[in-house]
Length: 304
Image (cartoon, rainbow, N blue to C red; front, top):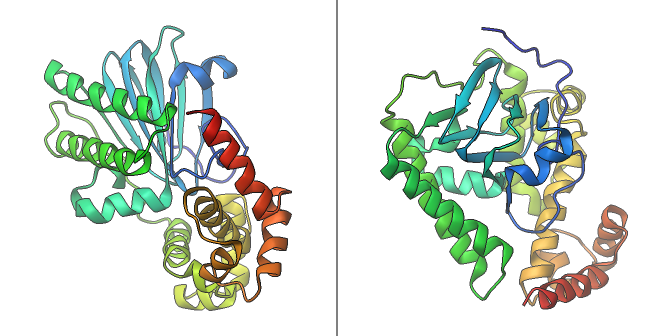
């Protein structure tokens, strides 16, 4: 068994990509061939600081590298890749399956609902040896894919319900697996990863207050300089950039999915003046909040 080092592991936004999260959704769904064929069916080992993957494969084979352990898998299988888990794939060209990517806020919400039994907490794979299990997972994945690609009233609520049902099914499978397999949880000795996870949890709890990095570092018990170093090494961004990314995600969601005014969005995210919020938003997207909302409205209208 080969152990991977974490020193120079790239951090991607979506697997195989360095671009930012493509939509204000907390969920992204696509077929595995859609992206992997662009990379000659091979996604080199990498990790995500704020994304969780759920892969479902119904046909084909792959070589999986998960937290340093390599495994060849064939046939029906599910794979769970939590945030910060090092993972890579080499798919066969005949691969059939989907990858669902959850933004960390949604993954954390699901973990809270499921408790310690949540399948999303640890890197794992499960061979689906029983046809009934394969069918149950396949049905949920198909429903998620259809709902994701064809927006309709109540889309977000239905997607969350479907993903929650999927996590319940996966949690049952990982709790009572019908195969011997190791679980690949975060390395317990890696204090840097633990500090980063604590920092992300604090961001999630307090981002609307826009605390200083010094304040958050003090709560973790490290200096702000050390926290910045950890964030750059493990996440590829400064501590402040990670805080700003969470603010931007929420701003985009509110501008897309609510009728709140620009001033109300600004106030809800801790900005003292709408003008400051507008400058912050435009600096990160090149669009003003108003122009972004108009673009999202046009996109939503075109998909109806």
